[in-house]
Length: 410
Image (tube, rainbow, N blue to C red; front, side):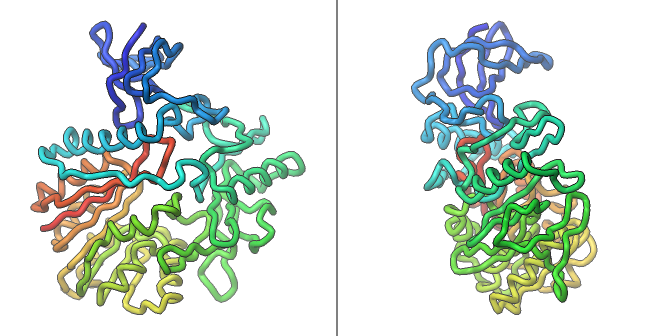
């Protein structure tokens, strides 16, 4: 079947129409004329793979990575960087219109990554002990694509991957290791589980499925690194969530918080305190809520190290805190500013309901998935909030993923 790619859809697939069917094509560029094979069908929608590029789009480029098309990590390397940015803007607009039912989306731009390659300072590698493979899952499967060099890894993580591959030949990994997580800091790399590849760091982050080793006299894991962003220093480890594109982080903080100041701010899904620290410099009282106890411990330590005594971290599931503890924690004080940065699945329905019950004057929603963002925005708008602004950051070049920040007022 021959089709012409019309545009890129949320999820990164190219859209085409042929023989009365909607055809979704992987690894396509807008304007490509391609010959495809149908992989599967669902009703009137066919999912297809490219067999031949008959006439390449002007936006198509040659992917530099030897694993592209097999490795599931990147799905936009076939497009020029300008085309990637344009596609991500359209993906956000599509989700806000179609899922969020927002008729008039505020005009917005996307902030490009200063370095579209070798930018990732956080990674997860899959390990296949039987076939001796280390890398990422292949696209659409649980098979491990054996990766020697990754085009989007920061140099420190590429070196860690190389070290792991050498160890893979020399000895057995930690018991039950199925994957490795790594994060680069200002002066080293934290790896979990540790396999003796980070000599500058103390070992003992704990193996997969167990609690991290805790340093004596502290509730923080032993293997940790620091990251300095915008004058604030954050301690974290490989198990902690932290944004993966360091170049854009100061701008992300500035836009997510904006000129917000006041008495009370709430930071939901606060992690190690990435937004909590700058919020604590602007508000008289800040409450950060984080369900992961280790991340919450890091957040407390980061606030204390910065001398920000007005910040308080609650180690509690966000929905549970909103259901039962929010009002007592706030002592009935109105919330001037609420920021949430949930995982890719977005906020639970009870979290949105809890936010609506708190009635914050302003909301900043930071999202890495435009579809779940749009779903949640619809609920907030129905609940009485107005969408004021939208902005995007290309935190994940060479992939369809994009970071979006929206501001709402009640």
